[in-house]
Amino acid sequence: MTNLEIAWTLTEMADLLELKGEAPYKVRAYRRAAGNIKNLEEEVSNFYTHGTLEKIPGIGKNLAAKISELLRTGRSTFLEDLRKEVPPGLRKMLVIPGLGTRSVYQIYMHLGVQTLAELEKAAKNKQIRKLPGMGTKTELAILRGIRMLKEEQDKIPLGVALPLALMLKDQLLAIQGVKQVEIAGSVRRGCEMVGDIDLVAKVTPDNQVAAVMSGHPQVKEVLANEPERLALLSNLGFKVEIIMVGSEEFASTLLYATGSAAHRQKLLQLAAEQGKTARDIGFSTPRWLAEESKVLTGNHEDIKQKDKNKTKVIKNPGLNEEEVFYERLGLPYIVPELREDRGEIEAAQKGELPQLVSLDHIVGDLHMHTNYSDGAEDIKRMAMAARERGYRYIAITDHSRSLVVARGLSIEQIKAQRAEIEQLNQELEDITILAGIEVDILKDGSLDYEDEILKEFDLVIASVHSGFSLEQDRMMARVEKALRHPYVDILGHPTGRILGRRRPYAVDVKRIIELAAETGTILEINASPDRLDLNDNYVRLAKDYGVPIAINTDAHDLKRMGEMEYGVITARRGWLEPKDVVNTWDLDKLLARLKRNR
Ligand code: DGT
Ligand code: CA
Ligand code: ZN
Image (tube, rainbow, N blue to C red; front, side, top):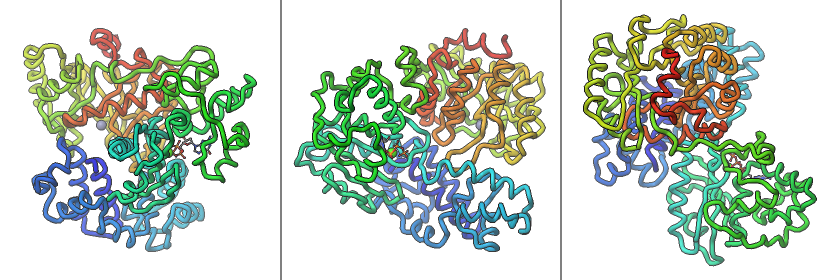
């Protein structure tokens, strides 16, 4: 179990305890523990093995016992009991901005509302405004929140799913009769939130996958156990689907299971236009597909031939075993991140597929925190770790003074930090440290320091960290003012969303992109896997407007500098090429592009 997964579980406990009306200090303990574990350099399981869980900051006897159970059995009886006591629908309501646990609890107590559907009905019937402490504003916030929530029910963030998928892949590879395993589905495509984990395994007929995996300690239930398909439910509620096929079918199965369904439909449509059948291009309707979905898949798939579509032997097995299918359609290979039917097939036909940015192109990280504010490390250690990653530059961007919870910097600290950075730049070779700041955009859109101070930095990120519930007009006026500010180089995490936890604040992102284009402001992809903000679609829109993107980790410690990968995946899903991403550029080009230097 990864740290993020443990943190995710503790957060659920905190939410449920709070909804149950537990004392705030108790709830806080769970939240703090979740935060500490998320930021922990070392794996929690190592502490567990050594019996030192209580050495982790914020973990006492009680929490240590709960984490031990999780690591030992993959489940938590405490959490299971809580889930029985608190209707699960209540927790989902917390994601709506402006709706805290107290309001949700009140709504539940007074109106008996337990699900999102019931909540929506109550809001539409104007029942919410009559409750103590609530008004029409809450009602509107609820309706807006529900509209957005409908899009992502019961999904888990890629940041939780991907490490889990990689771990399962390793475990599967160790099972007798398993020759190869690849991650498929939305996880392989890099979707920010995924419904389940799909894996495709190349196996021998006598493989032991079903036997071994059914007894896996983290498996709560075997949902389906068929010759070629095993569907599992983990103790924490994640669904895992494992497709098992022989060598000849592996590539076509991987292509199928990677999806997206829409992308595949488009490929079949193209085949039909070229007078080819599904069989001609080596697509088979997989036998393991449940009967009912075969009907759904219908149309273009050559269902009648399901009994035998042995695909021709794949010529070039290896990383791009799927390449041959695209070749048969006269197309270049299309990477999984693009397979969303968002114009990639048309672009491929015209030879206009983007040459996507990859982790290798990244030469800097422009958003990171140190122990001057709420980070864990000093500047030097952050810089040396960046150098080890092969970066050429970083920007240290601690919080500004209004953000008291994050120990924002006083004017004196800014000076001290700048001196330290200058000193380190003398000392360290092969890397340049920029003296930056992440300045708060205050409620009225002004910034947290005077212009004379802001002018002195090498680079300024401006972000919203408070007053999330402003209505759209005021929120937009606030952000617009920051974008028009001459010393704001980058807008940080532009929508403020936390995946599965906090909805974006009320902003018109298209308008933000227009304003960024007009003012020469760079927009951020915050690579933290619980943010991924901007998202893929908006990133693509930004590219259309010619707005450059910075992919930043916002790291508060060394380990989280590694989350750059998630930001890169998001950039790739947004069709970005190296030229669109400022932290692939060399330092001179980057500095010249900053608004302050233009
Ligand atoms: P998810 O799990 O909701 O995040 O998204 P996916 O894309 O992983 O979807 P999932 O897990 O239902 O199915 C995995 C892949 O299997 C999907 O990407 C394409 C393929 N697939 C599933 N159902 C259908 C279908 O009805 N038609 C077609 N053409 N493909 C399907
Ligand atoms: Ca899936
Ligand atoms: Zn921030």
